[in-house]
Image (cartoon, rainbow, N blue to C red; front, side, top):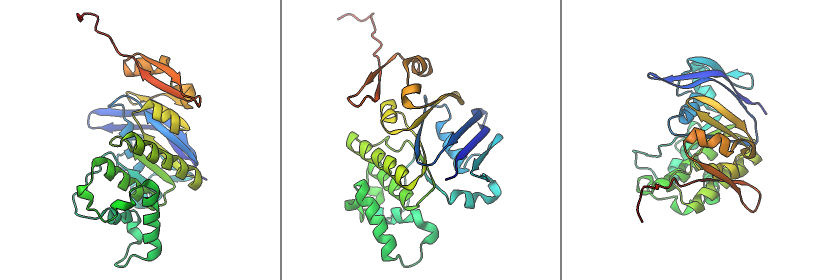
Length: 263
């Protein structure tokens, strides 16, 4: 399977440079978590890979194919992109929103095969009971799950997920990220996700990338990268690294006690 490569890319948004000479390679069957403080270019990186932001420098390739604004529609055919915002302004059922993942194959009549595929994905993610609800009546977390189903139905080679669990409770966070992990393995996808929870990244990501001020600070396995020595200066807080029963790192920020307070 082809790899996705970033070759010395730089991204400028307005007067701000959100990525500087960033290089990376993403391989099939792997989940990559993009981590870092707010405003360090994580979402901009996904948008650049999707072709929503132009590069000021460098190139992006999927195998031998370069990202080209002239052939953007062809480039995006292989990508399932779930942005941060899940607001939908039109009145559609959840099932109709999921079916939009196959927009290029939809006709006036939706065949049983496609309909069953959409319902099966919704069953796996745990929202099949919402199929006929209006998407606008759902919570933010439920809309995130619906948008993830839309991405899966698209049958992409690359999944770009921008904070996919930000509005979910613990049960649905674990369920969705487990689905991400399984689908990535089974379909041999390249999955790149922005996460804020470092401990969730340690559980579900094969590789993590730490961004700081648009620069790649470190990349590698969660065990190698998620160390207090790297995280504390980057986030500006003291952290400690513990381990769960499976030996997976758990990152805990330490409370900064205000010793001037009187009990």
